[in-house]
Image 1 (cartoon, rainbow, N blue to C red):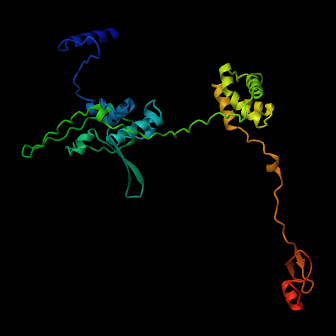
Image 2 (cartoon, rainbow, N blue to C red; image 1 turned 90 degrees about the vertical axis):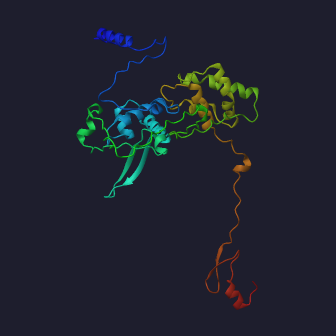
Image 3 (cartoon, rainbow, N blue to C red; image 1 turned 180 degrees about the vertical axis):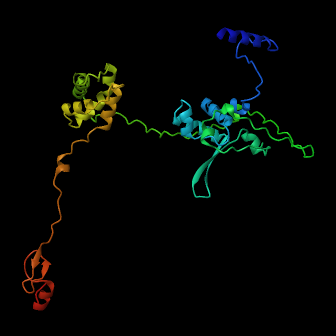
Length: 328
């Protein structure tokens, strides 16, 4: 079969008019009589659409009316994931090829109306719209391959009707004139990486202890093998822990427990934990001193009427003092 195919291809190339180019693609064009879709070069060669967006646009244009073109339906058909397909559909929406709107039916149900326009530029200029036959979707129609759908041919316009003016081809715009497309991303922006902690008062002894602690990590966790460059880069972070009074065993426990398996980047793991798990400085004696409280006047029982009142010493309440003529 391969030999027959090669012979047929050689014969077809021999019938191509004009000299053949020495490099690049060669086209063997055979007219289609059925099972084909007309795709404009403005879509197939779009300078601002990704290859996935162009491919999905061509695929949607080849489908019959009523076909499912949602993210999950396309992800079940192609190998690309839902994120890639969703990004390609947003590209087509940004360029005007795809329109998705929410509509409410007579029974109150909300649906998504998807419309694909094969020439967005001509639609904006008020170009003629070809009639489209809407075929009701049935379970058989959904699984039916696209190849079996007969293309709809519009009815010829009567001779008495005025002919529509031809739609001019869009003027090519230089690539520099196009505004950069901003496709919304589904991934949240990452926050900048926090800087590695630094000791307030570095010293040779502190540097030596931090370096020995980092180099000794592989004895307790064989996965954490750090190079000399990694140790020198991470020494300030370990020194900040030691300066804040953290015990070497506590630092070692924080850096070696519950490691991912296998740890792909040991130095990045140690850096992240030195930064994210840094304990606060030890409080001083002034911070640990007990908080002075405002003295509270105790309750007393009135010796005349047994009423409760606040006073530093026992006696009579205000009313009884007024009755007995006592000083306040």
